[in-house]
Structures are given as C-alpha cells and as structure tokens.
Image 1 (cartoon, rainbow, N blue to C red):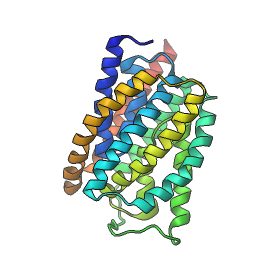
Image 2 (image 1 turned 30 degrees about the vertical axis):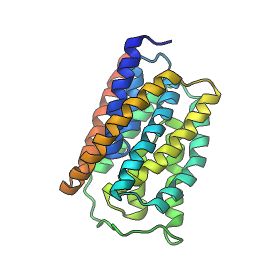
Image 3 (image 1 turned 30 degrees about the horizontal axis):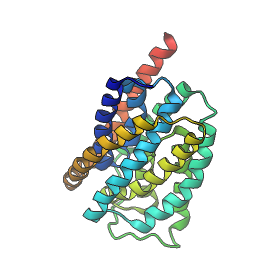
Length: 260
C-alpha cells in the first residue's frame, strides 16, 4: 500500500499525463511509466507498467472525445489500426511480463531516442488532410498497427509515440489528425495490456484511479493547446523534444541504478 503523499503525486502526474496525451497523442504513455517509478515511487516496474497502461487507456478515451468534437479524428483509419494492434499488444504484453523490469525501462528509453530523432527529421511528403483508409492502403495501415501494437504491449504503454508516426507513414494524414486518431489505438492497446497485467495481479487500482482523475483535467487543456500549435507547425517538434528529454532522464536513472 502506498503512502497518501504518493497518491497525491499520482494525481498530479495524471494531470501532466492527460495534458501531454491531449497535446501530442503519445506523451501520456511516454511519461506514465517513468513518473510511476521515479516520482510516485512504485517499487515494482511491472506494477508501474500495468497501472500506467490502465490509466493511459482511460485518459486516452477522454482525450478522444475532445478531439472528436474538434473534427481531428479519422475513425476508419483509427479503427483499422487499433484492430490489428490489439493482436500485437496481447502478444507483446505477454512477452514483456517475462522480461526483467529494469531492462524493460532501458529498452523503452532507447526506443524513444530512435523515434524522437526520426520525428525531428524534415518530412518532404505533403500532408493529405482528406485521406481515407480503404483497400488500397489497408495492408500498410494494418501492418503498422500490428507492429506498433506489439511494441506497445511489450513496453506496457499506450504507444502513441509510435502510433502517431505510424499513422502518418501509412496514410500521409496531417500531424493534428494523427494525434487525434492515435487516441483510438492508444486506448485499445493500453486496455489490452492492462487486462493482461491485471490477470497477473500487477495493477495498483487506487493509484490508477487518481491518475485517471488528474488526467481528465489535463486532457482538456492539452487538446486546446494542440490546435494552436498545429496551426503554427510546432506540434511535431514539441512531440520529438518531449520524447528525447524523457528518454535521456530514464537512461540517466537506469545507469545510476546499474552502477549503484
């Protein structure tokens, strides 16, 4: 059982997670695990992963409502992506439970670095705001969904920082649409992973509840900020920098743990 202060820190962390989910789609899942481990002080990495997966799934569902109202969700694309990804998430989360928790955190951080660097590269392809998902691009969308779902399940995250670039690569949709649409898959992947961890008793339910409560407030603010940043073309850079900063911190903490 955690201390009252830890639950208070959990609620504050939920606000930050909800804000970044609304802002960049995948920020919440990136921040949830390190906040659980390093700020709240959850002693087990696997409990932190399982609890964060549930909290991120719930907060993603809330953020999805806000993005849907703003008209930035491609429902068919998101549904196809999520359907394929759930299969991958189930397989990935089963494998992830068998891997040492500290090793998972290190691998997670290294993957974040690679994604952040790729996101900072200039894209020469033009956005396609009117893109539709159909039989022509279905194999690509489903393939990206399956792959990112497996990664998301393995690392116990919603996977938005993988889903957003995956949606852009497979459809060509604008960043703001990818952020909104990604929340369908974030919620589906997170719930699949959380259920798999719950079966093994690896979720702190009260902590998940306060995370979700804080995320409700943060998600509303983050969604509004996303619209303004998208208009100025800064959203993708914010997304990439956020990933690299958190990855650097995780690697630093992991190195300190290994060296004692």
